[in-house]
Image 1 (tube, rainbow, N blue to C red):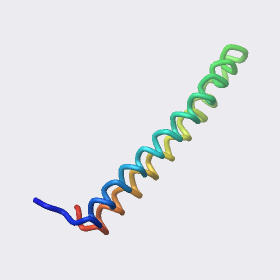
Image 2 (cartoon, rainbow, N blue to C red):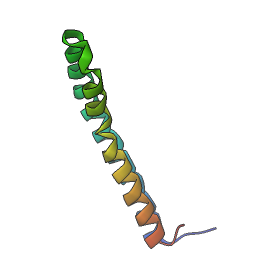
Image 3 (cartoon, rainbow, N blue to C red):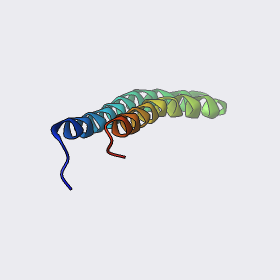
Length: 78
């Protein structure tokens, strides 16, 4: 199967969308994780709040995945 140049560029763009979301999530979770651990050490009953704050950046990766799927659909690769 051969694909055209436009489809190849779309596939690279979809990969960049996922990679950008993953890098952004990792950077955000590294800062939030260390702050959350310090918060739990001082106040153990705040674990739920720390866990919620740690999970929130995952939406960046989900958005990147959705954008990548949309790029692949509109490029005709899916």
